[in-house]
Length: 354
Figure 1 (tube, rainbow, N blue to C red):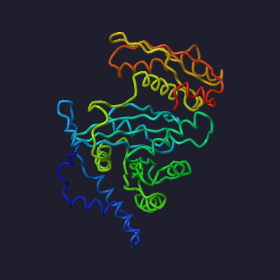
Figure 2 (figure 1 turned 120 degrees about the vertical axis):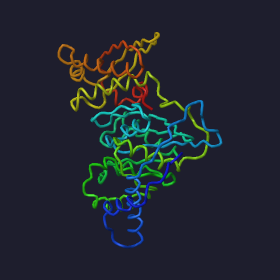
Figure 3 (figure 1 turned 180 degrees about the vertical axis):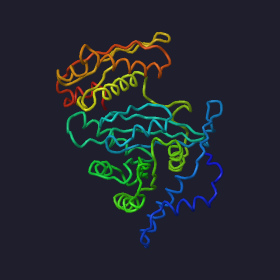
Figure 4 (figure 1 turned 90 degrees about the horizontal axis):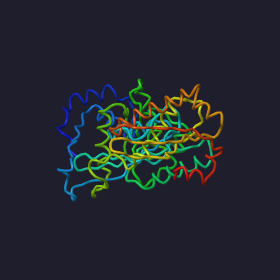
């Protein structure tokens, strides 16, 4: 990957002097200080990305680099937002509701001779021990043991029991990057050095990356950081592919996103969406979906007064699906009660959870 011309060293040194907190002397502190200094310096440097890799100009196989990168962290820490930013298109749904992501979703980005294969995982579940959450946790454990690199996402300066549970799953044999998300919200940088020292004591992270998933410059910089950990090998996917998930899967996810966003915290996280029909007729998609809930009260909550809430869910989902497919969408949504489905192993599998 082309990194472009290096920035002048003078302004970078000045930036380091302003941003890096003083540390006590000693080998361990020197190592932490160096890691923090390097991270802050690189955050100020532009990293041009060569985004020209059309099928007509694919790099020779012998020069190709490709690898799997797992994005892991507790629920609602920003993993899906990061994946969407890295891929350059929305492939993983987001909402303020915890436990939104329920599947291992793969997103690809091919830049010059390197193909990055990102794996977004569900947040590791510790609050409920039902069959659904056991399935989600198996997905996380499987992902972190089958990749070339792990990106462990935490909120900058924060670490709690939920973070610790995910961290305990990381194998020592696979390099891991500590990604401090929402770093733009940190105003007292002097607090980061002791926090970083504590994090390095918890796990031997290969690198520390302070960033914001909403900052395009930070996202571009992450590609350069991840690239060197990926092996030289042929690409796994075509240069233009963005995800391994089908349109049918994306339809269910988009409906579920609108469901969570429009019902807020009132609706239990166990609600799910099934696609009963997905047919393509030219530029038209005919989709029939069922929202599954566990109680009659939840059904009424989704339908709303005179069906207005369900109508709005359908309208917003249809608009996004039309934007995604570039065609017209005819969408029907039904709501059904399946009591106790989230604690029924067989039904969880039937509903498409691994």
